[in-house]
Image (cartoon, rainbow, N blue to C red; front, side):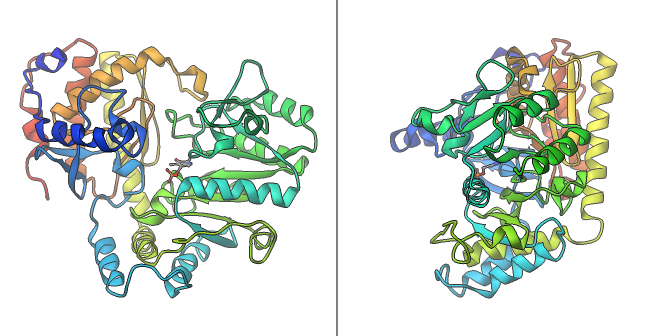
Amino acid sequence: MSESKINNVPEISRAKSAELYAKAKTYFPGGVNSPVRAFKSVYGTPLFIKKGDGAYIWDADDNQFIDFCGSWGPLILGHNHPAVRNKVTEVMQNGMSFGAPTALENELAELILTHNKFIEKIRFVSSGTEAVMSAIRLARGYTKRDKILKFEGCYHGHVDALLVKAGSGLVTFGETSSAGVPKSFADETIVIALNDKEALAKAFEDFKDQIAAVIIEPIPANNGLLLQHQEFLQYLREACTANGTLLIFDEVISGFRVGFNGAAGLYQIQPDIITYGKIIGGGLPVGAYGASAHIMSNVSPEGPVYQAGTLSGNPVAMAAGIAQLTELLKPDFYTDLHNKTKVFINDIVEFVSQRNYPLHISHVDSIFWFAFDAGKIIRKADEIDPHSMEKFKTMHLELINRGVYFGPSGYEVGFVSGAHTTAILDKAKQVIFESLDVVFGAARPATEDAAALAKADFRE
Ligand SMILES: *Cc1c(COP(=O)(O)O)cnc(C)c1O
């Protein structure tokens, strides 16, 4: 870990995190309750976080970071937003779960449905995975077909039938990407490359009248940020309609992120089913799937597609969602967020191009991704060079030692939140510049202590 010494930035202490991690390893497989958190793709001990406020998080050793992970996407208002905290606290006074309908479910549904013309009815569940799993079942129940088609490089949660990767060839059955997924499940899943009309046409030809649904992240953001052409998504829409196949937009990340109507609104494409998660729950566990009233009428108890949940529509979680989405609907929320992200990213792009570093930064609204060694915009999973992840690893360590936190994997995107002020973004930018200089070996002595700068006047 000598890299961080180049610019004389001391390594942060991770003593308390290391202690907690050692203990956690005795309790949980790999010491974590979700794998990427274990820092296997980056240097050092995973940081145990004890507090978040606005754009900042603090770890167990009291190190402070500007956070661009945002709990992997949900925290579009930043950490511990007062409106969310207050609403949750208020609702909690009346008890935390009833397993019976509450007015809060109506309230969140109304908030969404009156502003989102792409769905007419919605069902709340407790995670993105659950939303996707239910959407797939609904599509199969509705079309009375079994096969589903997914794209290499899209992540849809840990649903059995979707933990599959492409084999070799244009159109392939999935190969399981996790132990424990029966081959027979993977055999129902067809996998093709993103942004490939030819493969899509061939899949519909090879499996005529068999494909219940095509599922896509319209803004693929779980394996880098693989922005698709609007034209490809439009083609996909038309091909699904022509083949009696339902189009599922998995908007667990993009929903309420690139505008209140997500990617459907951004691209102006009407999918048949949309899944939500992350932002919809304001930091509490909520997922949802929605569609036309006609398609949704197939869901139990109205229709034959069974789906249920003990904690579905949980009042505390609904409260967090209501508070967060209410903030998002305020005038100019998205415009401000997108504008400041644009300036932030453009300045980094400018820096990178001046120094001629082999780094491309993809971004859409408040989502961004650093693609190292990429000479062009990457739109397909197999265009990512796995060796480039070494550079991410170095950058990650340099950023951490200077007070900036990115999600611990080069395949993960970053998020800017409403709490990232221009001043905070300017500080983060300086830290990123220094770190990139180290990554590309052009390190010069730091003109000022960027770490101290990043930590200065929290709460402008
Ligand atoms: C995060 C994510 C999921 C899974 O959601 P969980 O809440 O982690 O189960 C599914 N699809 C997409 C696109 C996601 O980003």
